[in-house]
Length: 191
Image (cartoon, rainbow, N blue to C red; front, side):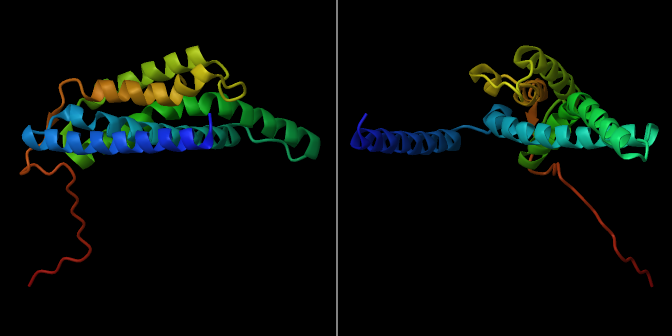
């Protein structure tokens, strides 16, 4: 393919995407908002939440193992002990942190921001199932990535499971019901 052909293809893709965005905006203005309008946003938040949750799971597991069984102070044994602790934390930690991250830091947060009231219990169950399926299908996707494992891995499958579970029976909050309400009283004086 020549450079001109690549530019034309890229320009046509951008133009088609703009047309789709404009048309979808027009269609949304004609019908009331539905929870399914935010599925892609919830999925993207779920992926980000799963990544954060996996990292937090790793660090929490590493810290817990370090407290429960501290490494010896001598140098050769200490390195071997820290390597073992890191390896166990790398295997166990993300698998424990991805489901709650995808659910609470991702999908449920996105739903609360846009006003979708969904099923958090089914979202958490879906993220657990998604993590198990992603781990089983992808295998060691971090060390030997394949085309399939870039799409089907614990992070994306947990986000997909959480998104699907959250949207079962979901409703849009009315404008009077504010889903994000925080009240912080720093100083209260009464006379």
